[in-house]
Amino acid sequence: MSASSHDEEKRPVNTAAATENDTQPTEAAQPTDADEKGKSKTTVSVADNWHPPKKTRLKSAILIAIGLVAIGLVLYAWKLPPFQSAVVRTDNAYVRGQTTVISPQVTGYVTRVYVQDFEDVAAGTPLVQIDPRIYQQKVEQAHAQVLAAESNLNNNQQSLTSNQSTVIARNASIANAEALLKKAQADMARVQELVGLGSLSPREGDQARAALQQAQAAVAEAHAQKAVAEQGVKSTHVGKQGLQAAVAQAQAQEQLAQIDLNNTTIKAPQQGRLSEISVKQGQLVNAGTQLMYLVPKHVWVVANFKETQTANIKVGQAATVRVDALGGAELRGKVERIAPAAGSEFSVIRPDNATGNFVKVAQRIAVRIQIDPNQALAKRLSPGMSVEASVDTGSKP
Image 1 (cartoon, rainbow, N blue to C red):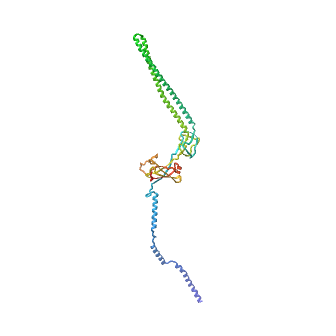
Image 2 (cartoon, rainbow, N blue to C red; image 1 turned 90 degrees about the horizontal axis):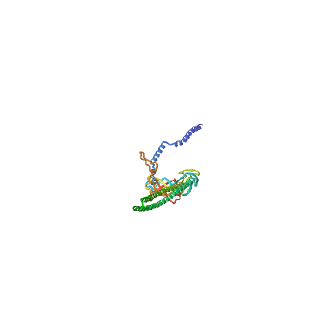
Image 3 (cartoon, rainbow, N blue to C red; image 1 turned 45 degrees about the vertical axis):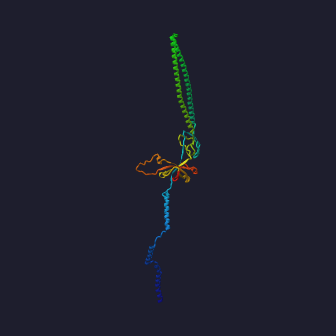
């Protein structure tokens, strides 16, 4: 009993020892203050010995090269020194052409339209026909007036011939009267001699004297009649000039009527392509009514450069035109003309800079660029297209 009880008394002691042994690993896993102090000293020593990695020369050279390239690209993009270019550019440029408005010169009803939208036509091609009947009658009326004026002129010519014949007759009358006067003068001389000798009576002398005076009056009358005939010739000449002017006026009226008749057929003034046709058959049109547009094939480019870009632009320099409508295709050309003044000078309302609030604005100078021939895409240029124009100011004119 005593031995067993002694063993049983020892078991609790062993259990407590076992419990203590089980708890020892847990207590050993927890850091102590001494361990924490050691670790902190190790961390401080490592931090004191750390330094950033040193850059190599190769990396520095690469970074410097990248910076220089970036700066160079910026300078090149903005065309700053030392990358200044002799080429000046502007996107304020358009294709221009002599676009013609087709309008009638006479009033009337449209009887026929010969063409369609966007059709290519040659010079002289009939486009529209206006009713010509009224104008045909005006031509015939004017022709009748010409015939009447010519008839009056012919009558005047007949009168002139008659008056000239009268003048000739009056000359003959004068010659006859002068002959009779000479006879009367001779008779008077003989009668006076015979009366002085007493062979004739004074009565016969009076008769001879009367015959002489009658012959003198006949000569004067013949001269007066000749003067009247000559005045008739002059009057006929003056009337002839007036009748000739009347004939010319009537002929001019006939020609005007013929021009109006010809204008009833509207024709293309030159070769080109038509716009949309706005006139319809049966429509009443007046003189000046817009019927359609005709766009000729000859076109050019007007580029509006800033005044700061035109210092070195000269006529004949090479130019390049980039057309948006052709997918950015480039066409060659050359400077043909330069505007004599800035665009603001040709505006309806000119700017007034004589004020206190002045802001300097770069003006635009128009430059006309001629497209070089023998370029296939040049045929597709149309007035109004937007383009980008550039001029090589370094090229020789």
